[in-house]
Length: 92
View: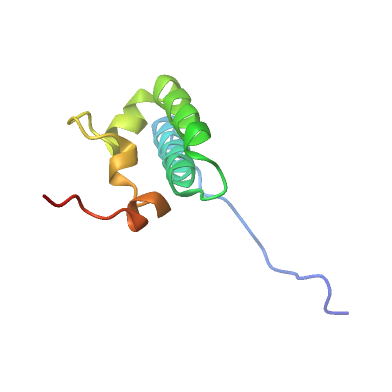
């Protein structure tokens, strides 16, 4: 009656090494997306954001520092926030 498809699906066999690489890449990609969502989430306040970023940094330092290298700049200074948009530059 058209509701059930008669398509055939199959999977390609991969080596254990290929599987591990795909698993690692997928997990890393997910964690990078999670980090980005913490940085960009406008629904959480700055105190909570810093707490979550610190926790992420402790748990996944490689991913955190691959995205935000320890060059003296904090993640918050790289993130445009509402506060930074409304602040005026200091003049003498």
